[in-house]
Length: 596
Image 1 (cartoon, one colour):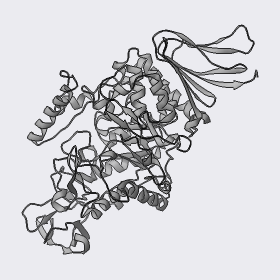
Image 2 (cartoon, rainbow, N blue to C red; image 1 turned 135 degrees about the vertical axis):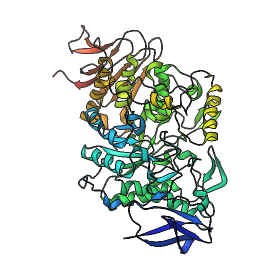
Image 3 (cartoon, rainbow, N blue to C red; image 1 turned 90 degrees about the horizontal axis):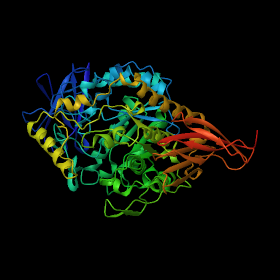
Image 4 (spheres, rainbow, N blue to C red; image 1 turned 30 degrees about the vertical axis):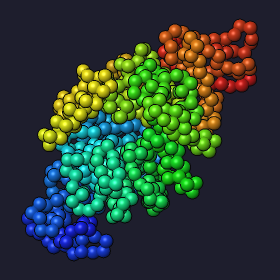
């Protein structure tokens, strides 16, 4: 038994791999790489690297296993040892899928991969196609969001480590669920980040909110780019993930002729062909730039989808009436109409919040709608509120939760739910951390208070470092059995089932969606997707809307309120022609022509 250890350390004059207290000299190779074969080292062997004779032993930049936390030694992990059972799994296409965003640490009381497995049948019954995990790369402490990861190749040990993650993905595939992983390549967390000790992983040529930028375009960047692309392929190959969500790509600066996102897109496409599985990349970006999802042949980056914050902001502001911060540019039903039909509200138009023009138009005649993810809630839009409050308590009427769900799940875009949204979870989802460095912990807590004080939120800002802040964010799985929550859960199930059953609701053409609105007195919106119509009453008073043109015959498919009904015009003999909507309600009906 032996293991070949490799590490990139271009500036070092001497490198040793350390196992069991013994230092083994490494041989210098091309391009700053070092390697050494160590006998009697194999799966489970702890190791690290010493640079230029230093006493300090550093974890591996590509450590596959950090059982003792981000500051501990790395451990050899043999990927071939795991017995996969998903050999017949070929993935799920992103078009037509419904996604579900999950944070492993708060999805269950236990906060582990194995505990999450026990809830997968709930997602199957709901109609979910793909589970999107928030980052699981090893980060400091026990609990946190995962966006301050420092060992990008090692699954977080408190969640269950490498084997636990593989069990989760393997079981999800057995249930027919694809699994997507949120990865962070725009920065690393500060605590435990030792990449800079090995090579030029960072550069001060570009500034980011987290300090020096990841070096994608300066001297020495070839190996850094390879590190990131190979990390993406590792998750897809070794852990059988079906896709990756790329965090905040607008914070990646790359001035090279071939952007790192295009390079990654090309590499993932090749890996998909090699593995014979559907693989996809989804970007988070606030640039409103359709180039991300434009094909490489047409000069784009060739990513498969991107998040649509404008849709969220338009729907959230229309439902809640909030106008603070970035919501100041949203709120009217006309704004929501534009988001539903044009994707970006800011498509080169003036953004009051930014004080400048923002975005560029989507070619709605050519770009399929499934390339944009729609959501009413997600980890950012809930967790970055002062108290981590979900949308339910913000609404003037609880019926608007069903209105929002109907527009989300029947809109042209690929819909995504945030865990617990489907039953209107009452638990908040706060920003929480577990930094062990006292100075960093204090800075995070104080910085959070200062951030919200600028927005006028002085009271009720939970301390991110308080264990209770984390515990309050854990889902309560007794809630789905409560009649009120069960009713909302059934509404989501019915909407997803309808989306799957009606071909019009999977039509990728943005031009096939038609929306009409009115805000003169009553506030209503009607969205047609082929022969299916969603009629939504945002106001608090009942109203009657036309349900069919002359000669049409509507059929009620779903109603958010039992008082919803179709009415007939007594002057014509053509069946129901209007729909009566109580305040804060939604009806979905189909249209058929003729009198059959």
